[in-house]
Length: 136
Image (cartoon, rainbow, N blue to C red; front, side):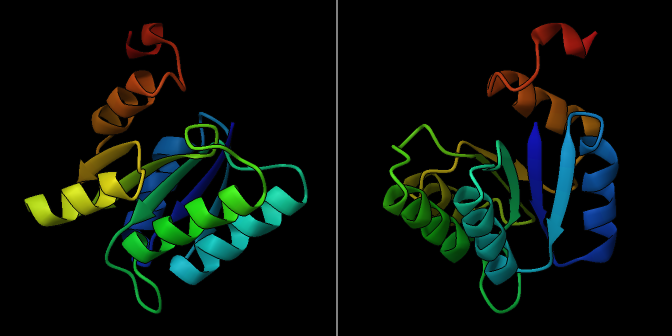
């Protein structure tokens, strides 16, 4: 599995990397601009990401805007809704406005920080990215 972690906070990035690297190859982006560039480059190289963990509160381009751009890039490259990368929003924001905006932007999941191994595993199982037996 090919995974992109878009997170501006160093510690949060390290935590996500530590939890996710057992499931596949992980790349990191420090803001939404880098995330969109990484997604675009991967699609153009015919090696798209399977999974994206996208923080909402990032400088330069926030996660909500990056999600919109990611879905636009996928669409322009003939990737139908539901066939692109599975996007998991990660954030300290649990208010209804941000949650609804993320799902309206076509994310597949939403994790409120702190992100834990258990929360990640639950989402990966629900997204059918890892087998249910992985929960042990």
